[in-house]
Length: 182
Image (cartoon, rainbow, N blue to C red):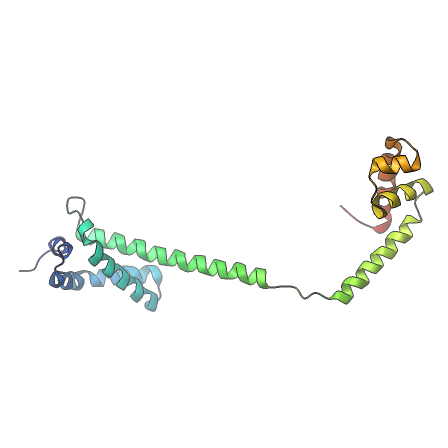
């Protein structure tokens, strides 16, 4: 007489190795087929199949025949394990991609950077010549010597509002002269 998967699983829960062998024979085709459909990779499918069957052996005592069939319980476990493997593989691929993107550094050309910086400095100096004397003084004190607007106002002995206006107008003229858009 052949026992049902439900009966075999109950015997497996008691540690019956022979019952596990029979259960293995009874469910292995369906379990491996489900894993193979989810993973589509033979080697990974074999690994997940082995993990599932080991989990069946270890957790057989959790099976409750009043809550469902043994085959349903095993296939649910199988599907979850296979989906976990897919998610794990996708997460690893995403991590690898992020690391590759972060690791891809653009080569730094110091000479080009220095030349570009010098050209920009010359352009700014040339454009400073187009400012009024008051605008140029205010901009140079604030941006080249590091003074705050109130300090510039004290140094030039003018009201703070006047300094702010000179700075705004001077920076607008500089922006237009240098060709910055934003």
